[in-house]
Image (tube, rainbow, N blue to C red; front, top):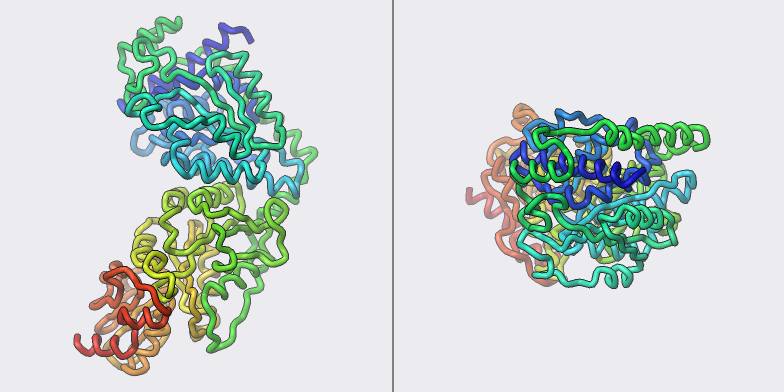
Length: 621
């Protein structure tokens, strides 16, 4: 392909992106114009299947800089995904499939939801981990993971966490392409960012390559080398100029997040030899060359179907929960829900091959070790180190890849992965979040480690289902309900032992049930370890007890069902903030302060979670 044709293809990308942002009067044109030259050569090297976006052996392409959607959608259209020119014209409009930042399951070809900077880098690390694991079982899976990122992505701490894992695990199929244009919203990057990126990534175990992002020969040579693994993850530092080709604005921070303006676009088109009066124009000869990606993808899948163990791979990813042999627990047994949960995780793992996960250096405390399994990449025990946020984004990537993953830490440290957890809910990832040490009853570690506001804040996230089981039996039944939810599920689990007294088999799909009937005109509502306390109080008062292991499921039920639960004076008991209970309760016995250091049972009683004190409060109503 001659230089003139390559320039025409690059300018086609540039002006599509510029027209999208201009028509929407909103968006980020700078990155698209700056990286257009790279995508001409990248189109010849990447292996994609626009005709079948879910083909298992496609390359994964992640745009960590999710603001670069004008570039992303332009490329998806040019490559032949099910995106029309009208979709490009409806960029950023309500109801379109081309929203302001890429959304998983919303737009064909989008591998994962990105937007908060750094998330996509960590997602790409997760995809590369998933690929490394699955290729140990099925070597014919040999795709690459490409991630395009910018200065903002590398400034966010999550990317450092994730790349540390990538270097340590030698994720040889991961290729990060760093758009190094030295511009951020406020001006030159060196205002706040002076890292030697080359040395930083070498120190993390990466192979580092550099290229001129506007020299086609250099781009092609470097991308080919990047694809040829040397056993390490690869970083490509691409030196580019933001808004390349924008007359009068090239290299300016003003092009990052605002339309170029009609005059600039017309002058730029004219300078490139394009008709300045035409918008959303794609030369046919350029389109034909871009669409070769789709043709090569069709051939790739046809050849795959001839040689690959397609059925075995499909069976590996099947999730048949009927095969699970659930653990059984003795009536009255005193066992922490983190411990019963460990037995449940192992039962699921024995029945579901794609179930895997790990902790942020807390497996012995979280009880998440899968027995009889090796460590990653040879087995299903993942180790994240003390990197909660990267762990969260990696958990999302494993889910997007097709696995059934879990990630674990203490409940108080859910704060450290909140960004990834929110994106899991937004993306409807089917994955699991194991949060142990769920209340002030964890004891001596004190208020820094005792979660207070966390249950309330997690329950406030739409499409995240938070389960807090009362005991071992309820834990099993929570998992039975959770596995049937096509959304992320979080478990809040005790450090301390709780008495096993709930029914062995009960349907928790509605999130709540009557555990004990009573004659008094009082209903005690509780979750988790406070259910045992509620039962002790109820025996004294002859009150009803309603266990609510999943507040989120309860919220989804009809009022008629809710009215069957709550009778008379309703008192909610939870060793946490508990603000959400005021929707149903006349009184909430919860936490209004942070916790304290001391023996768990003493701390519990000190803050009023004591049978006699609660009875006294109820009688005062």
